[in-house]
Length: 336
Image (cartoon, rainbow, N blue to C red; front, side, top):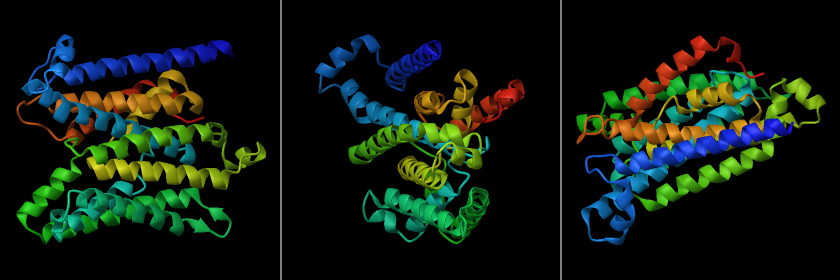
């Protein structure tokens, strides 16, 4: 038993070390290259261009990448545990579709010109409306039906996407470009308030999720067996679903639609360390942060001085990684 705990601690410390290396690479890379050994000197020269690049561009992007990557990966791990389905991710339930529709409505009707918070608020409102729609449509007489929730979420996602396409086909070219740019995802957010909200909500959700590590482990056996073990499955599922959905809604509202993080990272962590949620939750959070920091570094350097949407990089890399993991570890492609 102690050997297992030491293994978990070593794994998490290794991930934190890799995150530190990813942070260093991210801070040093870009159109303006910075020598990592010169960071103390750059920090002291507050009037230099390097200081402005570091504090106004790279550090905010870095913090947002950690927050959004950790949030999406943690949400994916939680939802996969709830549904006992390895293909479930934060966007499967239509949360991203609802957020994208909310942003599309704000852009088409010119609400984005009112304040810098218009698009994040519209995206979060769309995600929350979708969340409650899926939740209340899934409630049956005998309680919450998980299978119905999954199917309804997929259908709501299709409806939201169709509504967004309708808006795009009836609006101006400039609005279409704005919608497409947002949908592809970006970490180019300079507002400290939004970045702080994303970071604090991700860390808070990580702490809360650990209160439900044992229920998630029990749910791997199925709802009936979890009840026999003394787990109040209805309450646990509802709280975890709400936590994962709100976390995803905040991430999508701030950074747009960034796919594959919540699908690929929990699988990779599960393959490396096992299915126990006492280590899987933290491992998924840190793994998602590492993945998005590196993807963001690639997105802003591969065709420098131009920048690729980060959703393009996560889709390409995440898709390849997922295929490799699936083809080489069929026996591990399960949750119990």
